Length: 519
Image 1 (cartoon, rainbow, N blue to C red):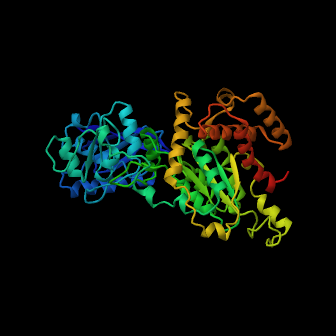
Image 2 (cartoon, one colour):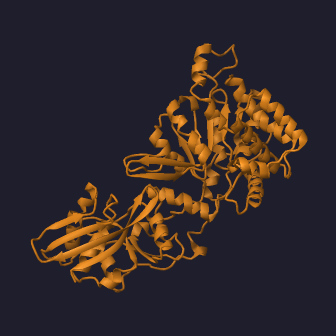
Image 3 (cartoon, one colour):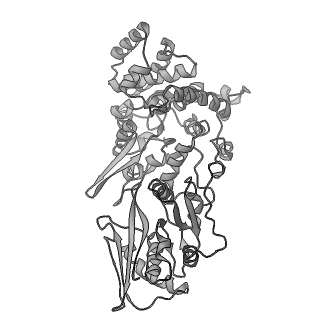
């Protein structure tokens, strides 16, 4: 038989597209021709594959070889088609039984000596394959642990082309493990209580700043966005890093979703590919818009998507270009990123918690006019880099004052991150039970209709919010965020209904932005 076909896959953004690798080897002039809307790196596969076949000890006669990667409307990129191309050629030559390649997805890059190299995106490929009834995947040995995260999928890790052929021919090959992954042994799945939590800064190391710690606890408990304003050295950055230590544990579904994003970008560890802790991404103020939201000729996820399910920390917030900050507005509202190109639309997940820190002015001393060296114009220009629409998407804004010497030297024992994390876990547990079956995980995810249903206010509370709405000139978005923050504070107190004290505290976290950004 001179014709064969092998199933492979391509990654478009985060979406998996199946690709049929067809090979026809027939008598004629000895040419190697590839078609199917190929990028330059895929076209180069011809030389790699032919050399790898010969160097692996297989017979490759001088014949006319035509390779087609279908569908022809899908742009093929990368080197992951090398292995399926080689298998389809050997199958056409009769060196691999054609029936053995059916129902098996093959993916991998080949080196000239026939070794199979690691490729990104194995996890989403294996997940999509399993959902479509494919139960066997042949992948590079370095990607084997990643592929086996998919329950029920038989994943074969191969080191070279010879191993691949031997497996397809049914021969016994050493070190090949095609065992089905068992849910109970999936890389000893652990929660956020893993070893790395101990290496994070602890809240007990922060002296004073009780109001900032309280705001951080509320923010994490409800998944709210947090902005800290204060002079240099007041502990803003350290507080943000301590937040990573009080994030609630991941469940398996969340863990797989985050791991999928990191897999596409090739950021997983070979031995322990499953991401077991919520991501904490710190972005430098020189970052571009594309670095944040993703982009490129073929859009890839950016820092926002890498922070999915966790925290995105922006230090020195006004130092970011205003155009960069403005692209955060839509992801903060919709919890997803949509990128349009002439040849397609891409959607990346963006359910993250924004934590930001900033100085109140260029020198950092405002509003202490005795120490501040900035002119009013300089302060106004500095603060104007952060727009009102952006501030409306911040749930809690808190001041971090300069630490007094007495606070620094006192022996008073502060709460540890472990103690705070336990309270956060209990608050999240209440929310999980309340919103079971709705797709809502935290109070921060509530929509306008959800607020009416889950955040009802009594007559006294309504009267308080009416006064606040008028006096503080709140927008509808700011009003809703105050209600959601109050809902979280009530959950932390273990109370079913939102009270006046909860609303007053939530309103207090909106006073700071009014102090600096006057209308």
